[in-house]
Amino acid sequence: MVKKMIHTSDKEQLILQAAMDVFIEKGRHGAKMQEIADHAGINKALLHYYYRSKEKLYSKIFEFLIWHNMSDLLSLLDSDLSFPEYLRTFIWNYTDLLKENPKIPLFILKELSEGGDTVQTVLKNLVESGKFDTSKALKVIQRGMDQGEIVRMDPLQVVATIVGSCLFYFISEPIFKTLFVDEASFDRERFIQERKESIYQLLSYGLIPRGDQ
Amino acid sequence: MVKKMIHTSDKEQLILQAAMDVFIEKGRHGAKMQEIADHAGINKALLHYYYRSKEKLYSKIFEFLIWHNMSDLLSLLDSDLSFPEYLRTFIWNYTDLLKENPKIPLFILKELSEGGDTVQTVLKNLVESGKFDTSKALKVIQRGMDQGEIVRMDPLQVVATIVGSCLFYFISEPIFKTLFVDEASFDRERFIQERKESIYQLLSYGLIPRGDQ
DNA sequence: GTCTATAAGTCGATAGAC
DNA sequence: GTCTATCGACTTATAGAC
Image (tube, rainbow over all chains, first blue to last red; front, side, top):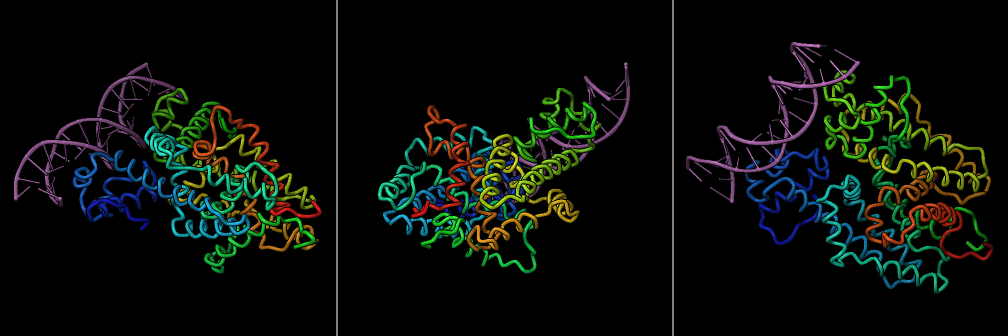
């Protein structure tokens, strides 16, 4: 289960949840209406009764997922804290978010890269409606630089590094574990907790030892 | 175009290249045999003549892509350089690799996460044959710590942060540009070049200013 | 609203001529 | 080896009974 959609009847909610699970698991084309119906405990006909076509159902799911995922992410990027606290808070909260829903980012990124009209339109509409405001996040970083809390650098580069560091483990988990880890002794929960601290340490102080730290 | 497959006739090569392009662009289920045939300038029947089924063709393409991509990545992780040079070299080479083939990592990660038997088997076979040796990469990091070149930390955490930082821009490019960038004035080439320097600076020295640097 | 049955279309795969 | 034509399975979507 991922999240609740609002303003819908119980049955609609049930279908949307089933569709979300299957689309996330199998992707746009790998997902079948029959499997969604089975997952929701109804039949195909009822799917089409509520949502006219697979395309429309998919579109609704994608819009919901990108909207919530990006809203969560962007709200975490906005803050009044000092930069060190801001960085720590973001890493902790975003990692927790990813731990709860590890498959959503990869789903969104892949669907966007395959880039059908449906998906690009949904994204453009959300951006143009002003619902995704990235300016506040960039301002927090800019302010940190102006106040000498952090070194000067293109804020976009900072964002890319922070988000990429948090995201990587979750999108690469299958191959990461296969390549680097003995499944029997690997403690996933522990690794993820350590991941937070490691990212914070690395991005704050760097790999090269410093005298004062 | 991505890369040449070896030990195949010209026509086989043509088909494999077409299949690779279409599978990368559309994914396993989104790709259609007709489109691959069109792309190669032949007809569907000939596809089945050379490769008995879509499944076999897909399997061949996936194996080729994960093999080359991981070989390239792991060979970059192995080195005799001092750690600062090692880090710089890796970031530069891996970013260049990603710039040439920006869609391959996302393709591999998504296919692995959807995790059909085909794909998991291919990966397991490659790993068990000992062709993906990650130990050397971890040793380079361990040696850097033992010699005091870098701070002590789980080497896996270091790897995840470095690779994630390099990878992120390329897998998130569509949404990253839409959210943060004015398409008209954005200089992609320049941003990618700056990306290398920024990652190196950030991971080496951190965001928090230091006296001696 | 919910179901069964089926229409309509798509796509992978093959038969068979050349 | 390469093509056209077609089969057969699967999947989306709808018709129509309840």
